[in-house]
Amino acid sequence: MPAYLLARLYSAIWVTFGVVSLVFFLIHWVPGDPVEVMLGESGASADREALRHALGLDRPLLAQWGGFLGGVAGGDLGQSLYNQEPVTRLLAQRFGATAQLTGAALLVALVIAIPTGIIAAARRGSAWDIGAMGFSLLGVSIPNFWLGPLLVLAFSLGLGWFPVSGREAPLSLVLPAITLGTALAAVLSRMIRSSLLEVMGEDFIRTARAKGLSPWQVWVRHGLRNAWLPVLTVLGMQLGALLGGAVITETVFNWPGVGSLLVESIQRRDYPVVQGVVLVISLCYVLINLATDLLYARIDPRIRLGQA
Amino acid sequence: MKTPGIAGLVLGAWILVALCAPWLPLHPDRIALPEILATPGGNAWLGNDDLGRPVLDRLLVGARTSCWVAGGVVGLSLLFGTLVGSTAAYLGGLWDRALVMLLDIFMAFPGILLAIALAGLLGPGIGNLVIALSLVGWVGFARLARAQVLSVKQRDHVLAAQALGTRRRRIILRHLLPLIAAPLVVESTFAVAAVVVAESGLSFLGLGVQPPEASWGSMIRDGVRYLLVAPHLVLAPGVALFLVVLSVNLLGDRLRDRLDVRGART
Image 1 (cartoon, rainbow over the protein chains, first blue to last red):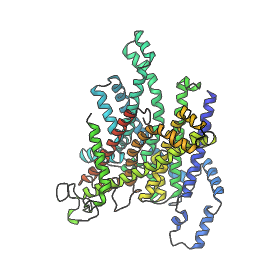
Image 2: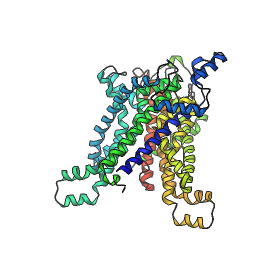
Image 3: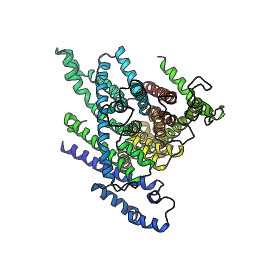
């Protein structure tokens, strides 16, 4: 285990360093100047130079890069150009809402996908299976910025069950969570089905049946238990799509998370905040994937012992 | 199964409209104040939007936008990703290690997040949109091409070509790429679906094509404000978008089964 653990940790650290650097260089490579944003077109050139110096933008690029890396390591992501607040504070204010939304969406996805995937596999070729896979195809094909308004039209404006947008009422979480969770539910149910079907074709299932276990025991103890491992990996990777999709879903529903902060900051050309949001979401994603891999290794000895 | 036929029809119509749009008698920007928010069935088949512009005309122009962006992005990503991925895998060693590191970093970003940030920083416009989406899109192709080349580069005919002193470029283009084409084709199909959604999504956020140009995404965004009085403004572009994406995905599934490509996309 230690060898695998070390290799995985090493790669996570390297990737984190790469992510921070890539974000830094992308921001510096694209056209657009923070000083322009702060002073507008009219600023006098002496003022510009002074501000440039104060922000450290006149330093060599490599020195700025080093400073940025040091800042990130110390938890300093700079200041907003828009309201001069520390980026970390802005992120902290918004992070809870995004975590709540993605958590709820994950729950929605699991609640839909686990039964659908299992039923589709157990009744392969039946109307259940065709229906479930049809749902899956629809689910991956429907964009969340269209599904959201459709749900609002039906359940908020039509039936009046849920608020149209915002985060004030407890029920306001429902529609955004369904909007964000549907695509993941679709991918997962398909994945659970195919993984389960593959496992159920293995020799040890035949053995389990031959020794007279009940179908329930065969499916749950031998089938599901092995089938959910690959699903876990896919889930880890799909959480990135969930975090990315949250940006659009939050905008649709006016949900006050980091995603809507990103869109607002892009409109204001508030580069440090854009940088901070991209960084924080990506680092969350790196952490989630690390956690999934470690969990996987803990569960599956083949990986731990380096045989897979 | 009948579905692929319908899917093919939808895609055929989409591409045809995209190619023919300049010659169609469309007036996507014609403002008609008396027709504001008119429902479908009146003077215009699909009604009019909040400025009285005909929804159908804008829908067809939006089809052109999505089709060109999809073609451009998938073309660029496929070309660049495949070349980089297969070359690095074939050369091996340091080249391959460097590519893997780079891919790992790019894959640490949720794709749509990176696209949103890039499109936002580059500024609006269709050219920047294509650049932003291609910068995200090449990664998948590079990864796939690398994995495929690694699995076939020790085949006899490749070794024979090497022994004959064939140039590396020729080996990659003539002896490796044809072998790995099938999974790349399947991946491209799914990439078209993803890019169509991404283009509309970015335009929905206001980061794609700019007014008055039409995109399905920006039509949905503009229509959301009138959801109660004029739901057709959101329904029409949404249905078009959904049908195209669904058809592409259906086609991709069929293609994957037909070409027997396993695990190109789960």
